[in-house]
Length: 530
Ligand SMILES: Nc1ncnc2c1ncn2[C@@H]1O[C@H](COP(=O)(O)OP(=O)(O)OP(=O)(O)O)[C@@H](O)[C@H]1O
Ligand SMILES: [Mg+2]
Ligand SMILES: [Mg+2]
Image 1 (cartoon, rainbow, N blue to C red):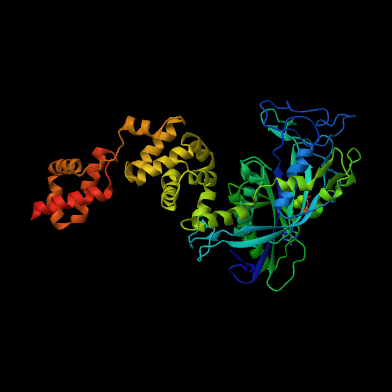
Image 2: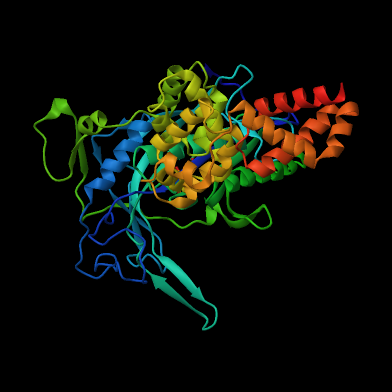
């Protein structure tokens, strides 16, 4: 894998862009950060709310250490320095869905800082504008690795939700979400294009899910991103001004919002306007960023140390003498941390180097198939079979279950053992390549993971016809039914064979091997036209 650090110059060649993210991640913990209420999605409004969540006088916060543990896992994945002492502060602002009038955060004294994250760059496959034509590999079929520094990671909690009731012209407040644990990951402005930004977020998302920091649903629900974008003339230094685009909820929104913003700023600078600090929002219908407020107009947050919470202390194996409720041993967490997505990628490419390319691997990751692939591989004992399995995964299985949710259902219905068994049958020519899609669809639909392959093949009579005599009889019959093709064979043998092949497949529903049947037809037709 090659490391690169080339500056991304915009197509005009006159400007360069700097992009920094503030990424809010909803932590996968059972209860909220400072109260015992559940943080799971609720059925009824205001059903998961304690006196503290309502800011009732006299109620006190009680810190949930699993939030800190999840945060530490993120910090390890992002190679951050873990600060042994960190503090909670009150960040004051008034908003109806935040009844205390402040948010508890660690903005100034975070538990983790100064990290660096390496991620593989998505490379545009071709010059088409299509948003799907991306791949993760360069022409040498290796990953291009980029890096982005992490400024800090802080713990904070979410706000409630305002529900606007237009009929009665009022706003209702639901506090179920209030107090659920978040981490905010703040990057340095090291990202230089929308493509780098999207690549960074996709890899980060994999890390967050793999390390059980947020729920599987990832960027779509558990992660919200503020993208800070600034454009500068080449050979000038940034002056610190930036545009902050708030609350982006999907990879595509992030990419499009950045692209729009770069173009907008390019026009401003070209017309000799300057970029001033500003907060904008992205309109997903109009594909534009829209002015919200000038940064200078923002209120003074009047930060103060949260008096009801002690500092958080971290320790490692070397400081065994420290213990207590809010103390977490970093080394305990490090010992149980899974392999990082990047190292995992290297491991896969190394283990299956005989047939797995970086592009295949990217595709498996993109389709959320990697775990299924890994499990299938363990049931196949040679690379020839494994290669066939890979090919089937990236064709038939891909079209049956094209997204993460569906592949998980597919994996339940078609167990890796069953899938491996299908591949072995295919290789032994007991079933045909042509029947695979139907067979896999049937297995997937049956939703009965206990059924054997034999029961499917018996029930639907899907055994390949391998007997030459039987096949010859079938082909003769097809020729009788299609006399036109015999004439056509004289002038256009390719087309005639294709038509005959289609007819035989239609009639025998994928029980015929392509190569065998073509040979038999050829033999029979050659004899006839002699
Ligand atoms: N010149 C720049 N161009 C683009 N992004 C920048 C630039 N300078 C700083 N940034 C980014 O701005 C972000 C600053 O985030 P931070 O949370 O520290 O402050 P904030 O946005 O003022 O606070 P808040 O959390 O209240 O929004 C970082 O992601 C940083 O990388
Ligand atoms: Mg910000
Ligand atoms: Mg911030």
